[in-house]
Picture 1 (tube, helix red, strand yellow):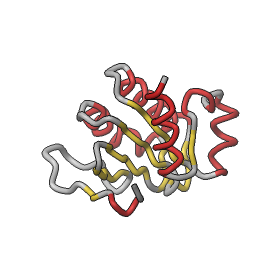
Picture 2: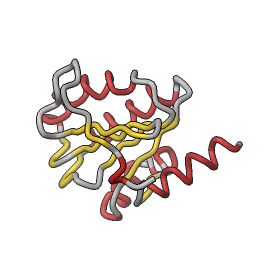
Picture 3: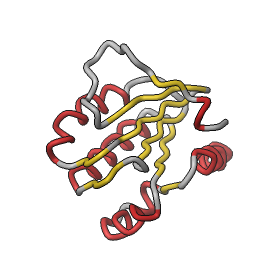
Picture 4: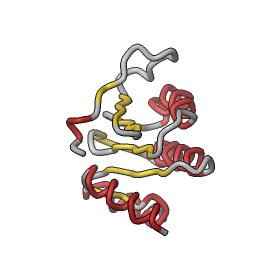
Length: 133
């Protein structure tokens, strides 16, 4: 599956979190794309919306941090909470990020928990390996 096969979801029944997040769906997965600066100010808008997205049924929920220009510990905490909400309902979670975010994840001690990938294909391959266990 390519990233271009995903369709952006518009007109959902809950308020959109400004321009900091977009939701895409396709082939049994949901992809949340976070954009711009994900700091305390953005988290106040995105967090409640992200909680509602976590409740949507999908075999795999993915957070894409590649379009972010900055993410602080509050934003990273929001991603961790989203992961926890998704995985506690036995759905899978994946994280997309660029190499510049790797340093933050390692410093924050969340590298092994979030298992970041660079491409959607890598996330799907990792999800397949987890399902086979």
